[in-house]
Image (cartoon, rainbow, N blue to C red; front, side):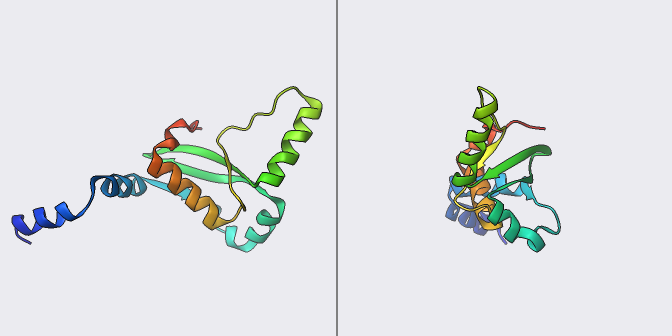
Length: 119
């Protein structure tokens, strides 16, 4: 590829798309290797805390809940205490692989991953 061809190809890529691709290359979602074997249980349970997001070598433990299970957890916690707190809480419609991956992609593309607490 000539320098001119390279410049022309680069001009076709928007800056925001390039930044998003760089962010995603430097980050990844880590689920247990056997997650597919019991994903149906996680969906039924409505929560999953075995997820790690690694961004630029920094690990963040994520806690995914569906809205119904989150409501139950908050109600239970507030019966015994005056506070409900869950670090790196992400609420999705259904706690399944695709929904968790999309949520993390949204966090990465919007820059909101910066508000996550690292391990």
